[in-house]
Length: 100
Image (tube, rainbow, N blue to C red):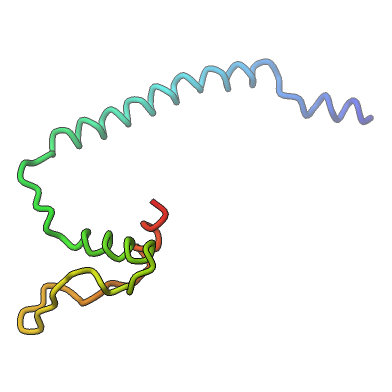
């Protein structure tokens, strides 16, 4: 009886053939999807990206974590009259950047 149950658990030849034929279709679909995304990104690239965002503050915080300096010692001169951002950001993202 055990051999009979094992025989029923094995896939038939038709099942194996259908699994093999689905693989090239999936590969072609994945390649088409990736090509579409790449073309979309290439078409929507614009000139003049301003890098004056707060990404630099995260990098400075990560550097301070690595070098053991005070976390908020980033060189940012905080102007209370016209604040552009907080004095320091939460340490979650800089902790993720620190190993890099």
